[in-house]
Length: 59
Image 1 (cartoon, rainbow, N blue to C red):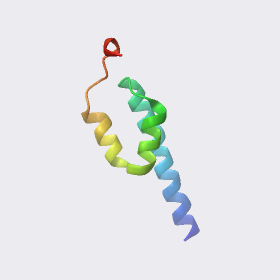
Image 2: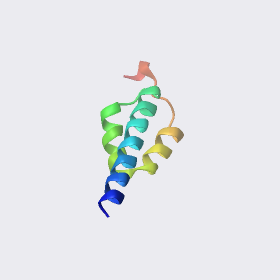
Image 3: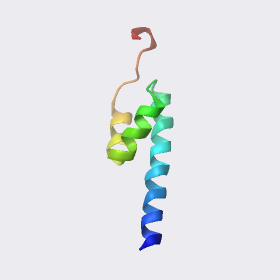
Image 4: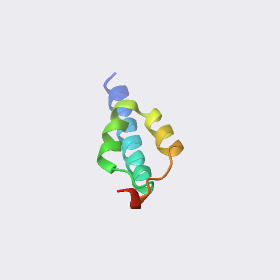
């Protein structure tokens, strides 16, 4: 049981780090998307990929 829990936590953490990198590539906040990814998992990956890139001029 403990091995399953630690394996799942490792997978969720790895996905959150990957999502943070994807978000940065799209001009979004790494920290916010890292935290969102910890909660929503693959749904955050889908949103990062589907949402348009943030235009730097609008900031």
